[in-house]
Each structure stands twice: as structure tokens, then as C-alpha cells.
Amino acid sequence: MKALQYRTVGTPPEVVTVPDPEPGPGQVLLRVTAAGVCHSDIAVMSWPADQLPFPLPLTLGHEGVGTVAALGSGAEGFAVGDPVAVYGPWGCGACFMCAQGKENYCLRAAELGIRPPGLGAPGAIAEYMIVDSTRHLVPLGGLDPVRAVPLTDAGLTPYHAIKHSLPKLVPGSTAVVIGTGGLGHVAIQLLRAMTAARVVALDVTEEKLALARTVGAHDAVLSDAAAAATVREVTGGRGAEVVLDFVGAQPTVTAAGAMAAVEGDITIVGLGGGALPVGFGAVPYEVSVTSPYWGTRAELIEVLDLARTGAVDVHVETYGLDEAPEAYERLHAGRINGRAVILPNG
Image 1 (cartoon, one colour):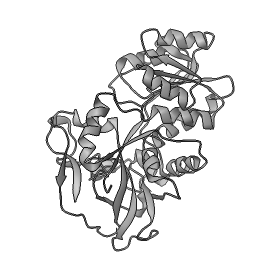
Image 2 (cartoon, helix red, strand yellow):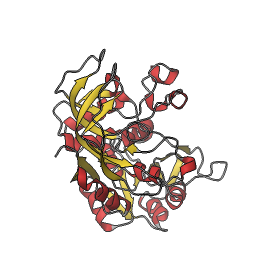
Image 3 (cartoon, helix red, strand yellow):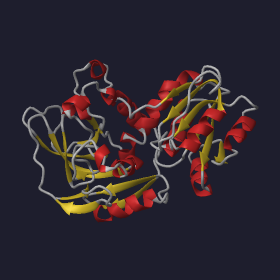
Image 4 (cartoon, rainbow, N blue to C red):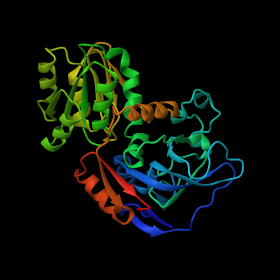
């Protein structure tokens, strides 16, 4: 089969031919319908060899949707032909966090060598992929696979972050979304569907701000040196009760600290390497700063349920498998408007 692999540190991913996978005990073979392209992959491909925590080559793609092609011995709960979404942050299933359904925070994954597809295990940008357990599959339930596949990360991650701050997103509150690309433009829709907050979107280009307005942002502001002051101005000096930074670079993280309200939440989702000092006087009183990772399987089910109501519609650009390297080039250059989706089987 064909697959997109990151093969050598410092080189672009390439489409190669690899052996067809076969499911082992408890595993599931998926024929991949759609796979998402994410900035996290670019972050991984920027690491030097001594920081790479898994061997190469690696088949990319941690967002996957497909149909069940075969079941390994002992795999139950699904049938061949079932359309499913893949829950990506695999855990051991047995530790204290996994017992709560929080496999994204599994305490033993590193120890046991358990890694997500596309981030250590073979991923979804291939004609077929192996899912380690039926526990990591969620029925698609009639959703369009192309528009649903980004929800497994670009929907789940902001949903998890927003749920954490729901008590503060009351009428009269303000939520700021920094970075309105793949995750950010979904976050805007989730905020509008789940809260009564005023949503302010920040990005560096008018094109991306136009998308932010289209998907429901009340205000769209250029993310520049004056952004924090602008947010304070539009909130009457209060600042934002919740700031969601989907960039995570030092300038955006610093701006997040400057625009947060007293008792506000700052959530750093992006992998831009920025850090925010926390201490008395460093941020407004009682500001909380978190850096979450993905979300739970139950939350993925909730995201897909929300999508079925029509409240979330991901803006996608589609590419064939042979065009996947181009999709990563466009993403790296900031030329993807929304989310890039690869169709490995046409």
C-alpha cells in the first residue's frame, strides 16, 4: 500500500510503498477514508534526532476516519464495513487516569511504549492503518468522513479546553481565540454553540480573520503588538475571562497574559514553544494557566454528537495521497485556510 512517511530527520515527508498491514489479536484494520494534516506533525518533523522519541520511518497522520476492513482475533464490537473515527491519544486502559476515561493523560503510556498513530505508531495517511483496540474507535454515525476527520483532534482538543473553562463563559464574558486556523476556527464555532460568551478572534492575516467572522466570531482583530490593548478596549478594560492560544509562540503567549481578566483562564494549546511566567504580579490576580493535551474518548463522542446538530462545520481543503507532501508545504507556509484533509483511497 501507499503511505506518507517521515523517513529521515530534517527532510520532508514522502509517499512510499510499504507492506499491507494485518491486524493482530484485538486489533482492527481500517481502510482509511480521510486523514487530517496538523501543525503537530510539523513540530515533530522539526525536532533534532536526539529529541525524537520514536524511531523512523513513521507513517504520519493522527487524525483518521475509515471503514473496518478486518478484525483481529478477539476484537469485538464492530463489523467489517462499519464507518468509524479513530480516537488518537491511546493509553494503557488500566491506570488511574485511563480508568477515568482520560487516556490522553495515561500514566504508563511512555513506560509501555504506547504512542498515538502518526506520533509514534503508524498513522492514518496511508491506504490502511492498524488501530490497536476497538476501545479507540467511535462510530461515525452518518457524518461526512471528510468533514468529520478533523474533529478527532482539531475538534476534540479545543472542545476539551473549552469544557474546562465553561464555568467562566457566562453571559457578558469574553473568550479570545488566538490563531484561527485548523483548531482555532473550530474553537470559535464550539464557543458559539456551547456558551453565551463574546468571541474575539486574533490572527495575522485578513484572510484568516475573514474565516473567523464567517464561522461566528463577534470581533476579529489583527494579532499584532496592539492586540492585547485592543481586547482590553473592546471589553471595557476588563480583559478576557478565557484566552485560548492555538499558536503558543512567545509573542502570542505574552499577549495572552496581557489580555486576561482577573480570575481568567489562559489555555496554551499551540506548540510554538512560548512560556508564560506565573507568579504574584506576573499575571492578573487568580489567573489560571494550563496547557492541555487532546481530550477524552467520551469528549470525542460529544464532539461528534455536536457536529450532527450542524453546530460545527470544519472548513477543509482536500488532497490525494500523492499530493500529501504539498499539503504539508502549504501548511508550513501558512497557506491552508482551515484544515487540510488527505483522501488516501481517492
